[in-house]
Length: 411
Image 1: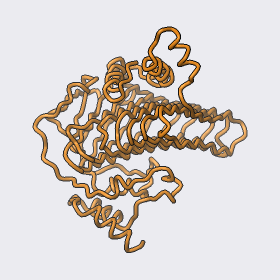
Image 2: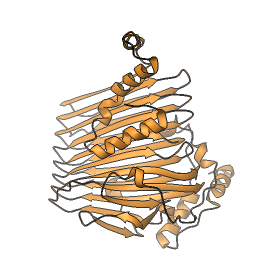
Image 3: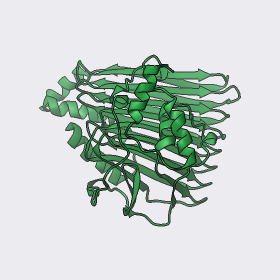
Image 4: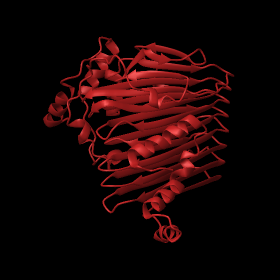
């Protein structure tokens, strides 16, 4: 490592307090010897992270007595996490989910988590609390558990760590909601490990709606066992820089995997989704559908990678990325990838980018609909199928409220 890189890392670490646990002290030393990726790194080619690396974050903050979460609650079971720390006094949940708060995490190797990745190493070194969520075998939990991540303060970093185990033959769902309370340039660096056991059905909804100065790098590391179903819906509506890493290891036969995303940007926001589905065994299905609507001078990145291993026959894998640019200054970098080493497969990927259909706009305006309303109708139709994938009425209503507030889209 160069002297310059070392000085940059030391500056980044200067306001961070290391935990007293031996494992985190060792992790902090490993992190200190790393460097942040640049655009020369293919994995970060289109995402400049200077908005993160040039700051001096702190993990110290004054706890707020009250936090305005009422407008975001969509379930009777919820946990409030303030800058990475659980607020049990503001949380409400029963016994449907077995929840444990702890200071040590599980072995991450079985999930394929890359501990050499700099943001993973940062989380390993500075997380303050791990939330373990277990769904008992054969349990069917109708009401989702909501995790409300609240950021506040100035340049505060939150290293959140979530561990989820969906037991055999269980059915359940979680909702992540990221919000801000008068925050400035706060950074949420989170890792979620998920194990979906045999015959289990598990859904994760992610709603990212902090504020225009918010920074976020999140990683979901998922392992699927035989006959399981995993679905993740990502809704990114606000944030200066958001990077989502979703890695799914399909280790059991007859699995189904669904990944959906609705990304709507404005101003100079940058939202990057990197997804990876690793089909390791035969007889599985995956479907990925990400829709971007970009306005202002915003930028988007979609890099979806699907690998079908040599012995993973009879795989159906589909990937779609559609993009609409609402301004001439907005841009998207799309890179869908398929790596196929098996013979008996049905795989496809596609990416389209364009502006709103002028003929469709004219058609609607000719029938007395204003141009602004016509644009909203077309955008609604474009991202509507992703939002419609949410089978929770309260969450769906919240999505519409936030779209109206952040982007003036009244669907």
